[in-house]
Length: 376
Image 1: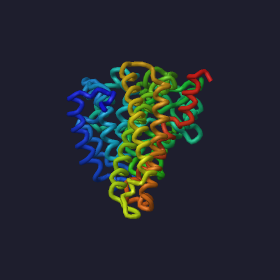
Image 2: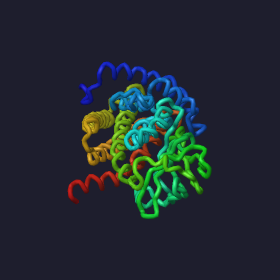
Image 3: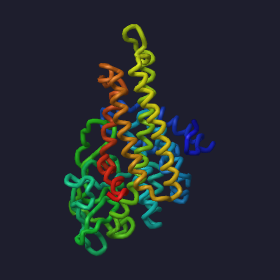
Image 4: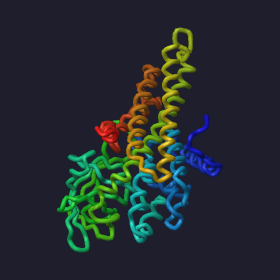
């Protein structure tokens, strides 16, 4: 059945480039990166040279000026090889849009070309030890000192935290408002903590960040001072939607590897895929996957039209990530004891899937948003 999203011949040509990149530059080395806890910085530059970084950024700032479907292609091809270490979508689809949407022209010229080339690696610092989904409760402060802000505080669970040289940081002012400041590598008082050891996403660097008397010039305020919370709320819908896109493709990969296994593995003299229980569960899962993909595609179309999709993106993120977690668990069961062995990709897929229903807003937060839209 044809996809709801209408990819052109140009999109498919680009898909071929992305597919080759992830199959040759990512998949063969992913296991090694898991051992060291991060991907090499050179990978970002290779992705930039290939045209995979920020393709929707205007040409005047170093991008290709392409439509958002090119970004979707990158997400899909990344997910198809089981990539969970090279957080390219976070860079392309979550953080760069803050710069392109809210920064002034001087800031765009200063930061975006490096984001497109891979010289700049982006992180966004919102989460704190005492403030996860409750962004209004952040404690990192920014005191006005005239031509700069003095920043003090701590962030945690920051993806790309070890490698990033540009960090969009949510800070709170004396009047309780929130701003977004670009804190740059090399600023005195900006320090990285340890690379956090996680249950999954072993190849992805996730860090604590510390700010002690960091002088951030007002030229690094993104958008208007005090409007940071509104900016974060406006862009969270896209973040949640691209996670849903990745969840759909990650689930499809799990189905693919499981189908291959159950067609080969034999028990009691027959291939286990022929047992009614397994056959019916696979039938249920592939049906649910296709229905979920159609809804996610539809929300992507609405986003590209410029429509507000806060509720729909929450639905997509909630359902697709819960589906990924549930299907991966079911499929691992079909592998039996082998599914518990880390040498089998299904084991890593199981561990990597667990975070999907937590970051960028938990399933419970998604349901709160959806429920509130019903007037409840």
